[in-house]
Image (cartoon, rainbow, N blue to C red; front, side, top):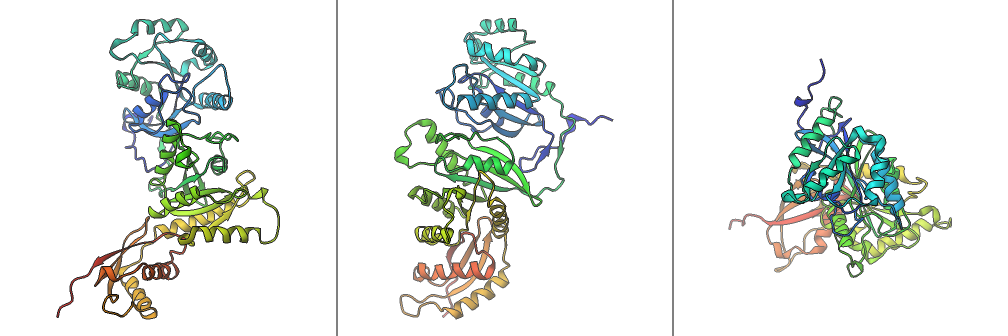
Length: 459
């Protein structure tokens, strides 16, 4: 009996699904593709801006439309007259069209131009996979003009307003009717959570090149032009039976150099990806070395309790001199100060050197992030540490640590109950953090310690 597609399992965004039908949003720049994408996935996933050509990389997301799981892809705008990155953007859009199970061609009522007509011609071979959405028809605006599009041979057109949500239900129903969901299945009945990696760093350090190598794809456009990536581009891959989710982000420059609204939103999305990650790969150009901006990014990741790996990319271009890495690592340790726990890994995203070591380190780090210490063993260790280095003795500096408990993993956080909160200085807390890293198996991750008052002693 054919699988009942209307009783397909409830979609869980934390699970992986195989064989999802793919729907691509295509059209010329500024017809509203990204606005429609955000509307259909029910979140501001991609940047929208009145300036044409904002979207460059195809941005994909698994979502649910009409109760059915599918993969939705927003693409860069098709342009006839190309400059800069436009050739790469159009090439990636056409590759997405060929792979899609359904193509939503977005047009604007009364605004058909040479780009629309050339693109329509190029889509002729995919005619049976196309739905036409005529955008910006809110309140019946220009609907009469939109019907003239049937002269191009389309079976029908759907009048919508991506911004206001008009008639999106009709478009969604048409999408469901066009797709085959019979092959959709869960990748695993009880899948492990993917390790979520955010690639962060300054522009042009090789983030997209590394993302493409890890995912064995060309999902992110790679160019020597700084600021190529704008939206967060997601990718997935597996390594040693562990699933990974990669978030390739826009390069982060100093705030004073961010002058365009688009770049402002790109940088904010990049920074927000720290919240969505378990581990941050801070990509550093090995030839240029560290910058204040790198330190700020690392500081944000540290404060949020994320694992941090300092990735020295373009290592293949470094001089092959003895102790080159040791010298670079020593300089990083000096500049980063309190982040001596963060591993430093030299790689070449271009040729793959060091990538295996990077992933091995990420796997070990993730196990530390999710590690939990029982209260009994923790307090036994705490007693030893207090004996080895007792708290200060004095009328103003004296305090007692009664007991401790780990309250969370990923990020790792401990609560210590003490007799006098104000007497505990940062030097002693640093001592305890170092002991926790060394003795409890948290050697490569940040640790947060919160102090709480214990019950007052009797007498």
